[in-house]
Amino acid sequence: MVVVPLLLLGGLWSAVGASSLAVVTCGSVVKLLNTRHNVRLHSHDVRYGSGSGQQSVTGVTSVDDSNSYWRIRGKTASVCERGTPIKCGQPIRLTHVNTGRNLHSHHFTSPLSGNQEVSAFGEEGEGDYLDDWTVLCNGPYWVRDGEVRFKHSSTEVLLSVTGEQYGRPISGQKEVHGMAQPSQNNYWKAMEGIFMKPSELLKAEAHHAEL
Image 1 (cartoon, one colour):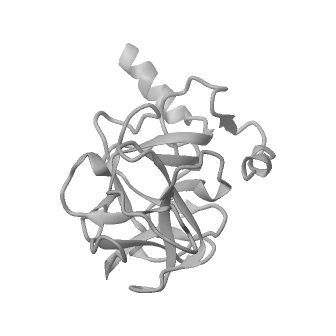
Image 2 (tube, rainbow, N blue to C red):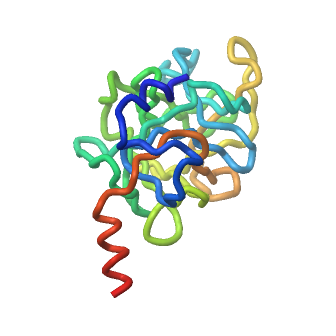
């Protein structure tokens, strides 16, 4: 499991179920569930045989696959301090933990549905501006029990699953792609993972609101 070494970082981390903290924060490592198709965002060292030829991104039904962990980071060329709550409308990067590549999109056609290809790109967490996704949600912050959309900051497509299924060598996995139109196919929810505790900034804001 990927979770174990992350726990060695010490008291900065809060495991799912161990805390009632409601917000999703920078530095958290999470699995993301497409709520319409009940698959988790996934990647692996398998490249597309068409389009960009970059590392493929899929949706899987398995709950305990370590290749479904993504680290939440600030947008390209920026630093988002650990524990900083993610605001609705904020651009972020999602870095695949096991391969170090970022969730990415560009004007290539996806192999099954003909929508916009979504891939994993870069090395050791560094790619380019096409790795940036804007979090769309209601309210001031992305909350853990809320559904969100991810809008590609450059091409404006929404991270989506519509049910197309791959054959070998990744039989049963669903295509993940970008779609221009909002629908139930592009809602995601943070599920299993390790969440950074919210920073003092959020606590200060909450205290100020109570005064």
